[in-house]
Image 1 (cartoon, rainbow, N blue to C red):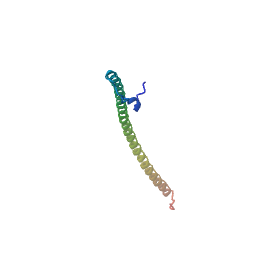
Image 2 (cartoon, helix red, strand yellow; image 1 turned 120 degrees about the vertical axis):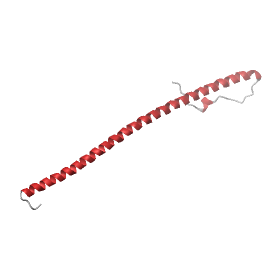
Image 3 (cartoon, one colour; image 1 turned 90 degrees about the horizontal axis):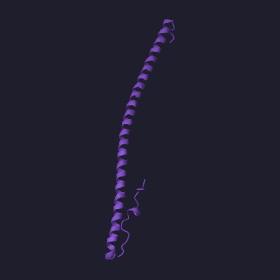
Image 4 (tube, rainbow, N blue to C red; image 1 turned 135 degrees about the vertical axis):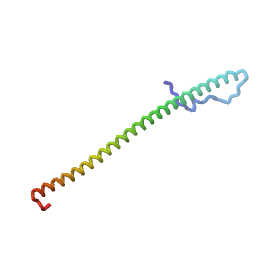
Length: 112
């Protein structure tokens, strides 16, 4: 692939202020036109490359947004499950304590 990075040297289309005779004017004008066409082609290639890169970044941003939305949904589900487990653990601990206390009372242990 050709190096399409723009530099001042590559974009230079007019290279002098020499006095040009009538016979050389057409030749110099032709050289200038060719250099200007080359500069325009390089600019167009750079612009097209930038457009492709911006489109790719936009697509990547859309994909990232979808991934982030899925992660957020998964995190919400994990949080709900964690809250459920915590509540279950509290309820189970309370039930175990009540059963233990009931068993001690049934056995005549009145100190607890």
